[in-house]
Length: 247
Image (cartoon, rainbow, N blue to C red; front, side, top):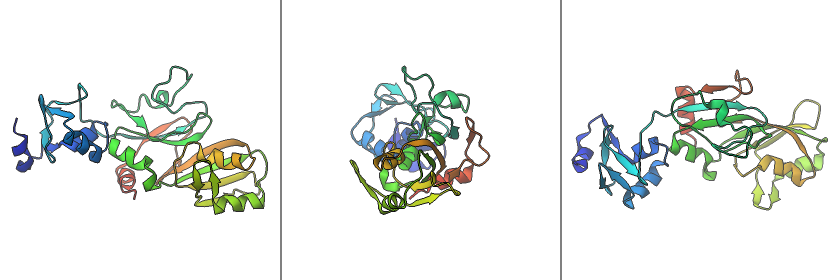
């Protein structure tokens, strides 16, 4: 095995081992470097600890006893309907979001973040572990816009309290934008850049409101335009580049 030499050849058929691992959907490239340095990756039967090691498509890369396959990255956007649980597999769930994207591609894709069963709207799927990690990490503060229908009109005092930032049990909740939609103050648009569990519902529940409907209409640079409920589409190259460029 000549991985030390491979690193210097610049052969276009070779890629860095950390990228291969990320492409296989295991983790991000940075996390792959850790796996390599800890001796958890085997290439053609040998443990490789060398940073920058390059591998070929025909090389056998093994992690935790399983051979990894470097897949073509897929990015699928779903307009999630109500009644589907965001999980890859749940024996107790009647329907999961995976049913809606099972024909999207041959590769195994995973949801990026989650929407609860009763929440509708945009949900991204990918097998790009590095980008998925980036989009869900709190430090990147990906923009998410929701349309909310409350059980009663919001008061001016509560509106201002949300804009100022509520203190919930898991900390301060910064809200980027909040606006009434139309003339009915039960209908609101809210923009948040954090990804805590059920955060939008908890904001309003904290103030005594019941969220009747919750629809995610924007995720990063992605919108629901021309995407009917329950349908999916593949992202275009420019959309993928914009997602990867999230700071």
